[in-house]
Image (cartoon, rainbow, N blue to C red):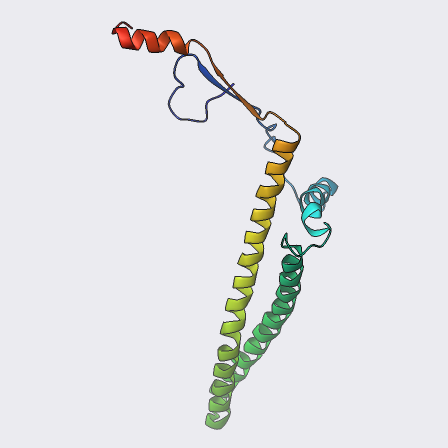
Length: 172
């Protein structure tokens, strides 16, 4: 039994917490270990492979995932174009071609004007999907906790009556 607080528990009160097993120092997960993929699937499968309903956010999550994939491809394409334009920009500078330089600057500025809102939208969709995941995970874990009546911790209060009586009488 441990106390999660930094200060010791009052006398007679014990908080028993079932702690997960500690991983050894050399137990690191890599993308090539099967246990990593099994644990990732066990964590993500209930969220992504659940029955689709309008009221629980599953349709919204799938829609956001599709939008996120499109935005990832769009930002990748825009960043490749941006890199190409930087090359064009510096080539024009090194060759001292003023017209080519200004054309590259205007195209570069146009790509930035298009890329900034798309990058911002991608971040918004990613964060919104993360919030949906956290909401679902909280709801899912609470349902598992209360429906299966698993006791993850127990609070035992022993001797509190004697302590309160000692406190009233001034002894202690």
